[in-house]
Length: 347
Image (cartoon, rainbow, N blue to C red; front, side, top):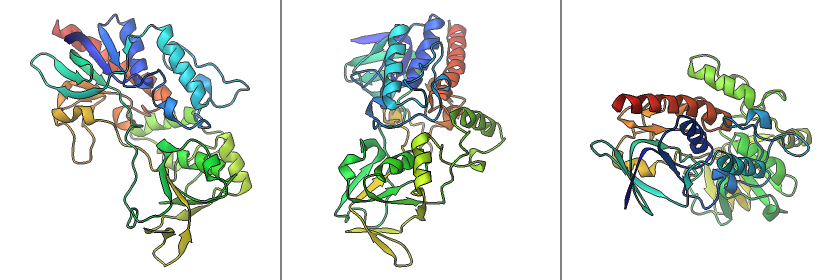
């Protein structure tokens, strides 16, 4: 059976829900397909101690403020899942799950979306699948020879499995710093980064980062002028313990550890790759829109090579800080306004 809608959103995480809110307010004919069994998007799969980089009031989707967590401070992954679950229900958003979109194809008047539970045809498609499902691990010589354990941020669940072990943590951004902060309480840790990491001042968090991202997109200040890592409370505590000291990036991996170009080596039991993610765009492959770098050229969020497709929530290339809650919220508003205008022009 083929179902028709004006707008089909692929992905029911924060970006998809933000789009759904504005589509609902505009009275659009739309549906949201989500591959997960339950609400919460990628936050449901994050490690329990993960913290947002902003207080709750600055980490909200449109129309509904995120409640402050008990005791205040920065919301956890579980707080965020609870918020997104409540948000979806509060606005009665038409999320259909679990449905996995396999392919988006061109048609004469509509795009065709093939899923594991049938086919949809939509005048506009919003892809909001995020990045969590495509963890990135760079290749280093010897990576397949390592006899210990390797895992990515996406597979990290907490420090206890590493108690008493020698752990190398790779990556210079926030996830690496937060994981280092707690693993270092139970294990012998070494932090390895491509360039020396810099903590942001204690009074700089996601609020300021969003504003800086917006200004950077307009040719203004760079976030990197301030630093790389948000000093959330666990990171501050690790800083005070003196463990936030990074070594240069190693050049190869040995069967029992890592080594550097000068011949220095370090034995370890575990390597945790906090090396980021790539956009989950496999369902868009039939459209052949990607450039050699892997991204799809966009004008705002609209794909240049297919104006019936919008990409929402993948990072700065689809809107300032659009991979964050506040960034997705603001980008979704402009995206839906553009979509509603386009639908009106086609009637």
